[in-house]
Length: 463
Ligand code: OOG
Ligand code: NI
Image (cartoon, rainbow, N blue to C red; front, side, top):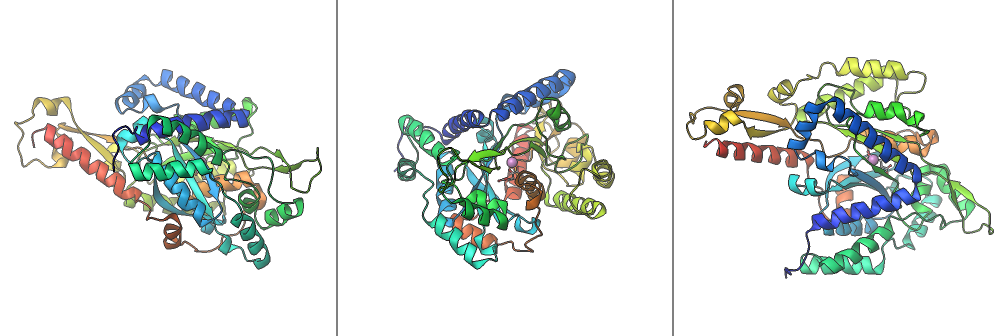
């Protein structure tokens, strides 16, 4: 039964996101420095581009600009994925899209938990990229079994967190008081534990298979491994990181810098090398583990299936031309080739829209509102746009990119982790079975949102 005294899931997500950010800044002080750098770059950018500030304010983007956009965790077993889905649902976050990273050499598959409506996104844009370790891809049978046995023993949720998930599912939400307890309890799952659950030898065995495997298996829980603020100028952040003593990733992932930004560009600072304690270590002795980092993202317009196919094809062309991922030695060539090869993708919103390459919101213009009710009912969308009764606004891409994600993983697991591909091992059915539901299609969400905005705009025009 639906109770009437529940608070909105969006509010729970906003509180959780803030609590997570506070925790992570305490755990990883360098992340606080990164937030400061991004805030400075954004403020500077807006001062230099006042017209853009206006556009952002109109599309409700400005108020949420300096809020974290996403974090990431890696879980170890199906039951963890299943329950994390239930935890996120309490906060209005649902699994969107399936990402296969095995083909890029990382033995996981993933989804992103996020809000699915524009209003909810405005209230809190927080999302979590969540990967499930694929032990079945590990060929060393003995090691696989040992890893399985270690994971079997752990429980990553507090009893109270799971109890409140049950309450939320039964009552259709949580009360204010329950929500506050829930936020604190859920946070425990994401906390860093410097005490490993394995011996030094076990850690080495796991790590030598793949550093990622050690990161997932050797700890009590799926510590949040990064948080990511959003910037308006990622190249500037990349340039300034070293100046501020932040050890930056080699290259910016994703599309090149463009007049009309598309999809998602990302960079990060390299994972810290942190002290950890193995179960067989004496008091005062320490081991080392690196997993946790800070990331920055810049988001652009969402591409349609047609636009996305072109993006994937162009990125692959760059990869082939460069001979894989960029290295320090060919970095300049890489950026030049990237810009060159992507120049076939139109760089005005008008063209991206008219060629069906990207998603847009439609709005009735002032001229349209003035003419409302007197417009010729036979005018089609293209004519209404051309005659200035309708205008378009780019829809921000809210999801992730598997090739970029693999690049982020690898940069933070060390180059030793740049393993060869596991081949085409995509297995969405298995993932969804473990998750306990199908993932939502990001393309459907963008298409519906765009169609809805057109319908609303036409109504305003009296059509
Ligand atoms: C996730 C890496 C992917 C992104 O922004 O693409 C990611 C991870 O390292 O666990 O967060
Ligand atoms: Ni990320």
